[in-house]
Length: 405
Ligand code: PLP
Image 1 (cartoon, rainbow, N blue to C red):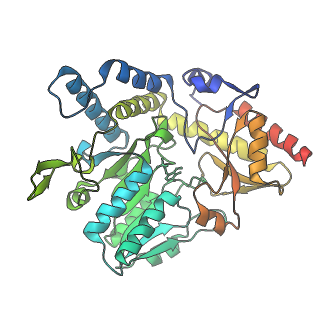
Image 2: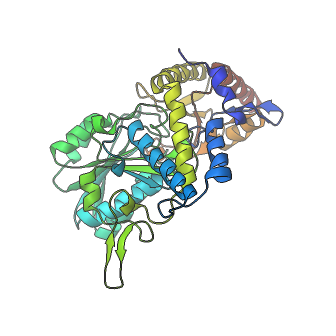
């Protein structure tokens, strides 16, 4: 392992805290990641020294802010290897990115009787916008099933790809199961039928090297806050040929070329999809986050997290009464579980009192939990600043909880 985790942890001030007098163990990284000092400083300096609205001003500060904002777009472009910064649209998050496609792609390309294909393991953000589109246009949602381990059934997937399908929308990594879906193969299959594919990268972007050209994704969505960046900001990558053909999602400033009461014309990409003042401080903070990850190295991060999930799985599996939800080969650093018949909320609350933050609930994936025969479960999710010692503390805490019941 070529990561110095003790050095890395110094970059994340929040991790040094105590909770209820216990050292904080933060295992809720799939919900949101913590922020390194460079990101926090970029936000502070942005407001302290560089704040001015972008794209509109001739004055120094505005031009400086515009340059920083557009440089951030280029950093995102390189981070996911898009072919042009024009294909990088800043949004409020994965959810808004997917809603944008569901609306604008839906307006341009979808008609009554058409179908959208999603998988059973999607986050609600990658289900509900498509259901809304289907309702609006009298279309049908089709669902790729999975095995009990949490692996998508590829034969069933292929069978769904008919001439009625307008788009496939699938997550790269499941936020509950940790399954890493074979999106490159899935895209290749869909493209055999000329069907474009949207990849939900919310749970992949912080854990895997993403190359949208190599996977040949038509759309790729992610949130800044899940990749050590700020909240309220996200990215939609889209191939130019689709973005050009899609109508704007929202109207307002920035997205226009000319506005007259008789007729309004729209701006070029990416601004056509960026109505209103963007979060230009947030974009520069996202740039800092991505630069930070690059300096650590995504391959190092992936290798270390692979070790962590292996260690956690081995030690947690040895506990009596433990069932792990999601056992796909090569899964990511997410460990969902049920433990005896202790309610996950009780587990979460008791762990919290021991300083350990995990998530409990349906994880915005109710259809998936239903498929697993559950209402709720507990989830520990790891990042490259977590350690085996923290996992030991988690396992010891679970043993203690078991004794209490
Ligand atoms: N998709 C997946 C797989 C997620 O895990 C999440 C958040 O947990 C989202 C989409 C939604 O992300 P956001 O709430 O940042 O828009």
